Length: 561
Image 1 (cartoon, rainbow, N blue to C red):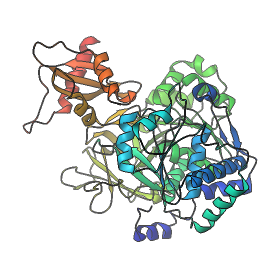
Image 2: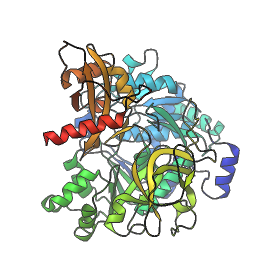
Image 3: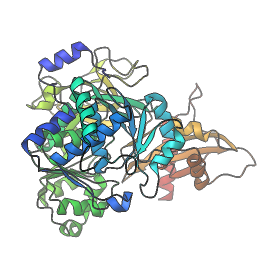
Image 4: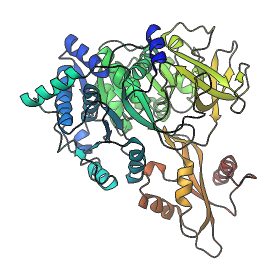
């Protein structure tokens, strides 16, 4: 599967931004250079989470394990362009799946473990997978059985029973078949290797096809921001389903021969202990964790973070005071990241945003002419701001407009759907994020909002319209809609706003959530607040005005406080 046209490939290749490396060719290079170096380390609570034993794989062992899995998948009929859905937590088996798919020329579509039957059915209808890979136990949930119920007729393989991807050896016959397949396969860095999922700018789940070259460009921006060094030890706490983990850690670690230590789901105490015990050099943490570490020096002093060189964060505005304390008192530089599955790649570092105030909320205008940044990302991407309605380019400070992004990191378009309006006429991806040009001189962007109604709950993008539609079927409701409200830890949470029929008992929040769960909605999408109204605010066209709902909910919260 390819999405990039020949002109784009030729231009980016000529510019030195795209090349010939694939995920498995990067692995082969590390096997040649450092076969015995530690490549992947499971989290210490893996057995508690999944019932499977912890693994620590060298680069040679990772190569062998992915060969074994690739051979087994090949025997199942998977090959070049075959699509497989994978729903696993961050465990070594998931990493092996990525390398096995790369070796086959197949497409891997990783799903968050929070997704239930409703989300799996919806995404499978768009992806049309040939195989589903899950596990029999994740915190007591059988993800493989859940997939079998959601996708009757689709082969579903259980990683811990049907597939022995961490086998010590591959049979001679299986190795011969894999070698035959690999000989016939022309490795292509522009072949699509992943289809991840995002709400995009509309709220409808969309598949984001990305090639090896796109991922490598993203990885190199992260490696530049975090100043990765060959052989370092990196701790990845974010699920390997999106840009932060795949681009920020998987590809970058493999290219530079780093050790990738896994963690998931996020558990603060264990995460901090892993930084200490694994002698981690770089990781990314949610803002709330960094806020807690700086508010409680005794917590910081309870661990040995001497190996930690720097730490990243993002997904919500950072606290300048937190950055100042991390750097001045603890001696650990903080990097503020902003990105997306589609290929946004911005970051603020001590070099590009020298003060905590700048770095907390401002991002360099990478890819704009005459900026003072001499860096890979400045050459690899292009960015601009436009009026969301007219498309006029905005160059003055203080005027909000839509951030648009192009370059080596950016995808070509969503899977199997119209991409009308997704890109500008000159090829920039319309991010849906509102920014202002800031600074004196004006070298920075500040994110000020979103063009659309997407709810961002702790980095998970949620479509309010999807929940609106489901709630409209709740018995006894005249109207229903959801909106976001601020949360210090997650950034945003969800409030359900309902209008009840006259003389009808009003449901409580538990009943609303139970109704949604019965329809297969993932738990992370459930409302955490309920407001009962006389009527929903609507515009002259009858559309719910979600901004007004947010004001109503925030006013109600203030009264409670």
